[in-house]
Each structure stands twice: as C-alpha cells, then as structure tokens.
Amino acid sequence: MRADQIVPAVAGCAVILCLCAVMFADFLPTYGGSYADQRFLLVGLTGFVSCAAAILLLFKGFPSGKLTQTLLPAIALILGFPILSLGFFEKDYAFVEPGLYSFYFAAIVSSGLVLAMQGRVHRYLEIFVSVAAASCFLYGAMSVNVYLFALADGQADLSDLIPWGFVNIRYWSHVATWLLPILPLAVLIGPLREYRLWRSLVAIGAGIWWWIIFLSASRGSIVGVVTGVLIIALCFGRQSWPWLRQFTAYLLAGGAIWLVLSVLVPSLLLGETELRSVHATSSGRLPLFREAWQMSIQHFPFGMGPQSWLTHDLLTQEYSESSKFGHPHNMYLMWAAEYGWLQVFLLAIFAVQCTFLFWKRRTTLLLEGETKDINVLCGVAASVIGALVHAGVSAVFIAPGSMLVGVLVLAGFWALIVPCGLFEVRGVQANPKSSGRLVFTAFLAPLIVLLWLLWLGQVHSYYVDMRTDEIYYKEELKQPTMPRFWFHGNFPRGNAP
Image 1: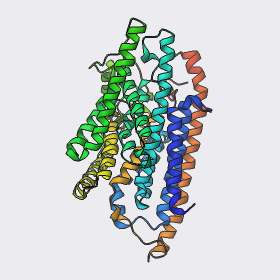
Image 2 (image 1 turned 180 degrees about the vertical axis):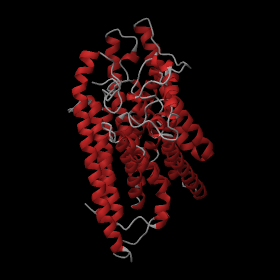
Image 3 (image 1 turned 120 degrees about the vertical axis):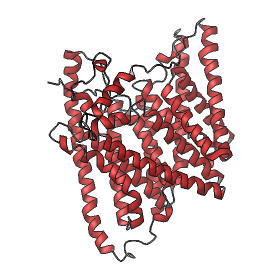
Image 4 (image 1 turned 120 degrees about the horizontal axis):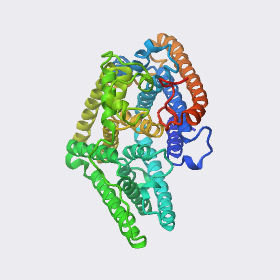
C-alpha cells in the first residue's frame, strides 16, 4: 500500500467501525454494554487519531508560522478544558471528562489538517457518506422488520419499539441530526452515484429515517436539521439546489412513508393509530437550564468543576423538586456550569473563526462554480449547524454514539474549510529549522502519547469504580439510571458513600 493510500484506508476503517458500533451495537459482542463499549471506542479512537495525526504533522515539518496562528483558537479550546479543571485536581476522576473534550477536539483538528494536507478530504467524505447511507438503509430495513413484528403482535404505539438499538429516542435523534443533511451527498458524489439501484436504496433509507423522526416526534432533530438547511440555503442560494432538491425529496419520502406505515396501515389492520404529538413545551428542561445558569455564575467566569452537575449542592428550588438528569440538556450551559463561561468564550472564538473560514471557502467555491464542491460543503455544513443547534437542547456532545458520528463529520468540515495555502510543501529535511523541529517533535510526540495513556488509565479506573457503585445504586438506593459519561452516569454524586 502506498503512503498516500494509508490515510484513506485508515479513515475508511474508522468510519465503518464507528457507524457499526453506533447503529448495530445489538448485534456485536459486548464488553460492558453498548453504551460503555461506544465510550471506550471513542476514548481509543480520539486518543489514537490525536496522537497519530499530531506526530505525522510534526514529522512533516508543521506547523508553519501561519498555520500556528490559524490554530491558536483551536489550541486554546483544547487546552481550556484541562487547565480550567486544575483547581479541582483533588476530586476523583477530575480529568476524565476534560480529557474527553480535549482529545475530541484535538482529533477533529489534527485529522482534518492531515486530510487537507494530503488532499484526501473529498475521498474521505465519499467513503463516509457512502458507508453512512448504506448503514442508514440497513438500519431502516431492520426497523421495518420491527414494525412488521409489532403489527403482528397488535402493537399500535410503534414509538415504544422504534427507534431500536439505542438507550432512548434522544440518543438516536442525535445521530439522525448528524446524518440526515449529508445523506443527499451519497447520490451526488462518489462512484456509486451513477447506479439507479444505489440511488433507490439511499432514498429508501433516508425516507425511513425521516419516518422515524416523525414517528418519535424528535423535536431537537427537526429544529436542528431545518435550521441548518435554511441557513445553508440562504448562504448558497440557487447554487445549493442540487443538494437541497435531494434533501427535500428524502423529506417528502419520509412523510409519505409515515402516512402509510404510521397512519393508514395501523388504522386498517388494528382499527387504531397511536401517534406521538409534537408539542411546544420544554419537557421539563427549564428547571435544568435555570440550575445550570445559577451554577455558571457562582464563580464567574469560572465553573464549579468537572462533573459538578452531579455533585454540587442544588441551587434552585425548582430543580430540587423536578426530575433529575445526568446533564442539563444543554451542552453550552453544562460547559459554563462546570468549566465556566471562559471555556464557552473559547468555544465561541473557535466557532467565529470556523464561520469566517467557511464563508471564505463558500465565496471561493461560488466564484469558481464548482458544483460538486459546493454540494459537499452544503451537506457537511448543514450537518454541523444542525448538531450545534440540537446541542442547545440535548446532550449531543456527551452521548458516545453522537460523539462518534460527530467526530467523523466535524473532521471533514474542518478539512474542507482550513486554507490549504497554510501548508508548507517542504519536508523536514528541506527545512532549515529541521533540527530544532526534530527536537521539538521528539519532546512533544511522546508527551501526547503519555497524556493519552494516563487519561485512558483514569477512564478505566472510573469504569471499574462505576461498576462497583452501580450495584449499590440499583439494589440499595433504587434510583433511576441517569446516563452521562457511562450509562450509570450518576457517579460520582453528592451523596455517594
């Protein structure tokens, strides 16, 4: 295998592994349950990708001065999580979640740089959207199978059974938010787009996923995806029509499937139809938001520490009297509460930079009139915007399945928008500063690997202790499960023995 083929091959394996672990966990051998297995996969993948990509970039002679300046917001965001947690180092598992976010964003940035540097971003995205479309079709076909068994058993309320294979509807909807905007790309790019059978399979899979969205009344996904699509349509205008046309066709197909499978067939065979209604209430989220807000201003601009949502003394009467969750269902308020508004500010700076780079890339593509590249940027950017909007009302960046799919999308997005002119064409040997950079690389590369291994050890210790506490939590306290880092996410907690 040639050197230039290694990155696409590794990326393809990562895509297949992640999507199989997320969508078909019920059919795979398990170590600690699908939720824990996905978390361990995320920890291993982000750590390995961060280390491998960073080492590759360092040995290639990067970063240049220009690239270093471009990466400053990303570096600040990555380092912010552990640095803002240093004041809480005496707490148990203090660096488990900060390490997760640091390596997560590091994997996105470093892998995106490698893809852009080697000019492999479009090949990577072709692999990703093709595997995603095939996975969505298989998942959708199995969902129809579940649907048929439900009808045979006289089950009218299908939302109790579909979606399947996830902890709950919310975690499936996170994945749907990432994938629905990019599914149209499966018939717009890649070698399979010319085959009618492939186009039909993609349309069926996407239609079934929209059916599940309507069936489960996933408001977060609907709002997020629609917002992303509208923003992209406004940004690109008529140039977005090829992608937007496919997206609209899949949406209408989903509506037709919902009408047949959720309304007509149950009413004819069972004489009744159970439909979930989309309502405008907060579903009990407002008390969580208020509690997180109060936490965020206790030590402004700093937070109350990692996982303090689980361990802090309650601040609002409203939340103390309402249902408890492992997170406040708003990622930005959770980060503000635990790491401080300073961390959210660093995230905002990085987001503004990405917006500027995206707009610059958009302008270039519109001037060049590259329809294929425009379609790709439309789909990926709509996915990112939808997920960021969805994160405002759900745990998009804490659920392991969502994060696994998200790292694949965000790496592609970063690779699309990062200016290729920032890369040096000369290798280490041709660089007059190569000796200094070799020394720098020899120091930094082992340090990154060491930090990953130390974090991995703390994650495993956290898992072992969580399993021990889980027995007491279920048998003695008899408390409901609150997923967060682990499925038994309410550990550590304020009243933990």
